[in-house]
Image (cartoon, one colour):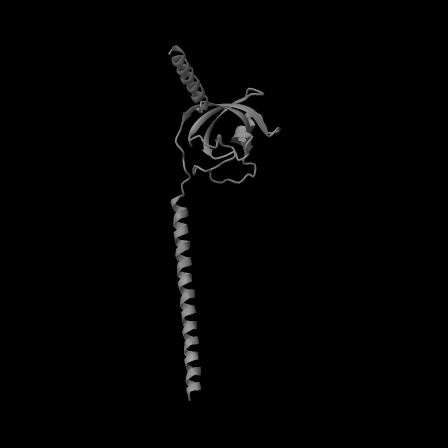
Length: 175
């Protein structure tokens, strides 16, 4: 009986140890950086992307998770926020922006061994369109719709001309 209880106790302790390792309190692995093309685009969270911002991509962490990332090789640190998905290369655990990569000192090498610690969560700020751009879009869409109506009315009138000419030719054949 004592052996059974001892065995169960060992199993419970082992599963709790492994469960703690599976939480995302600390992430260790390699990181790379992205955003070198220089053009701004959106992130998977809907927030605007800027290559100089302190954001990163992670495969599974919730958007808005704040990480303190430390380059193990040179002890440089940066605080980043998860706003995107990736990296899509299996050997990397995190992708940081160019701005964060510069602070970590990995631009020349292209990658680094890192340790990232979850330190909190912040809200995601999605890019919003300004009212002036939306009014421009609505006026341009109205112009497109009216031009489509004009072209469709031209098509109708040309098709009615064709049908009337067909009627004339068929009436000639009957005579």
